[in-house]
Length: 92
Image (cartoon, rainbow, N blue to C red; front, side, top):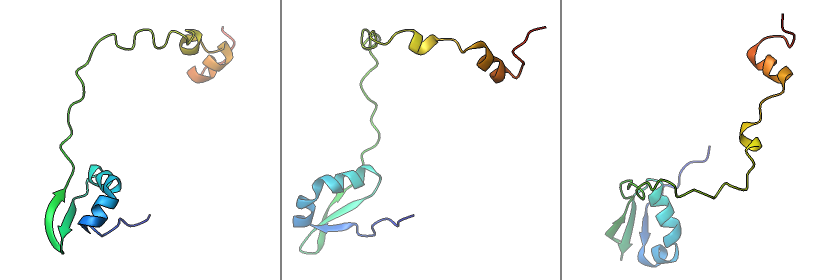
């Protein structure tokens, strides 16, 4: 497994140039220090996980209409069902 990049302090120009990459690292849990003239000036760190949009029942209505029910609910063929249930195909 590759080791994580140990560098966590970036000068202002480097931070501006690589802001998207640094934000991705912060989102992954790293704390990034931004320095000016070699002195730490700011800290980029992940925000606490925020709850998403409130649940709206029915917002997916109509989005899956083009998928036939058979894609979800087709029963298994009898011989395959028998193998899953651990019984022979033949019934007494």
